[in-house]
Length: 276
Image (cartoon, rainbow, N blue to C red; front, side, top):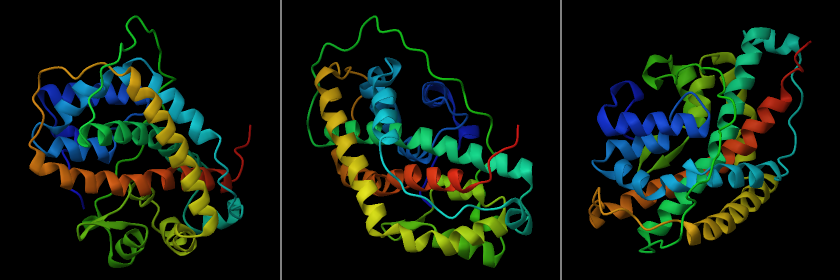
């Protein structure tokens, strides 16, 4: 798995940034993108100092969510209560699975905006906009607390194999998106996903949805970058020797984050409609 700094181990400035990300993204966790940057000395502090105005103003979130909501993701066959029961998923579990999916559908577009702006900085572009002084924005209601991400090492061989079928690789290191690590709390459901989702990863409809989302995000990033204020003098930028490795990580998220939108929505919409 990619190196990361867990939320429980964050201290000082990084703990403060984690708190801001949870508040502004309106989810009760920090995603693996920022946790990975935090594992690299100075990276998260510098990136947040440069990019925070786009998110404290709400501009990055609202445009990212709007772009993602307009994408046609298709449908999966509906799951019945009986079929979920056979997977060890009761009604309360199904509700939790829906909340997990909603969390990633909320987070992924914002992370794409964050990564897109960071990519511009790593390409050498430097913002000089007026910013959004005085902008008042309140995040939406925080989503409920979600189950923790399962450590692959804690799974049995079959469940671990199923989990890794839902992952990809970064420089030869396996990377499994957090969506599937949370859904690994239900091993039989995870096994079902490991059978039905991989054929869709490179399907034409998925590629079309991914392309539509990325085009919209790229256009939004370009428009937002124009207004982003100049980067503060401190903290100092990380060494350029690390840029290539960080860009490789951003390339991975450029693939997996659109999939979180597509598959998060597909999985949520395939669940039985909650009664009442």
